[in-house]
Amino acid sequence: MIDHVYISVTDIDKALAFYLEALAPVGWSAFGNYSATSGPDNVPDLFGIGDADYISGTKVGSSIWLRQRQPGETGLYLGIVCDSNEMVDAAHAAAISAGGIDEGGPSDRTYFAPGYYAANVRDTDGNRLEFVHKAWNTAR
Image (cartoon, rainbow, N blue to C red):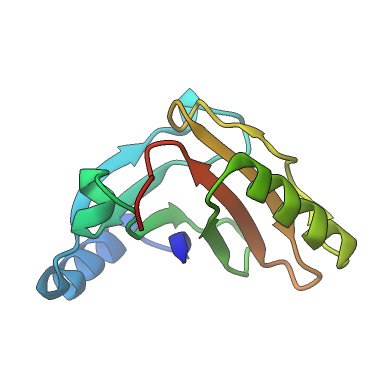
């Protein structure tokens, strides 16, 4: 299951207006922003839009995070749900074994939220995967 996708855009306000209007009929809405000042240097400002399940936290849902596109940036950032921290570890190891490039090994990412455990890998085309286990997501 896909947990989240980062979409790099050239104009945050314009993109946010577009996605909010386009996704309203399917029950998605804005739920908050993440400020880059509260995490490591490589995590940008993010603007969150999610479905009702994701926003409520009662079960696994999906979200889109808009981020300001950087010069020369391409590729996709895709967060994939893992059922446990051990599954994050295994997926990260398998991706590295398959030729992926480590962009942050398995660890707690408490700057996002307590119980957020993840690992990041880049493929040979620059697309990024985040394997993520969120302790509060117990039901699918």
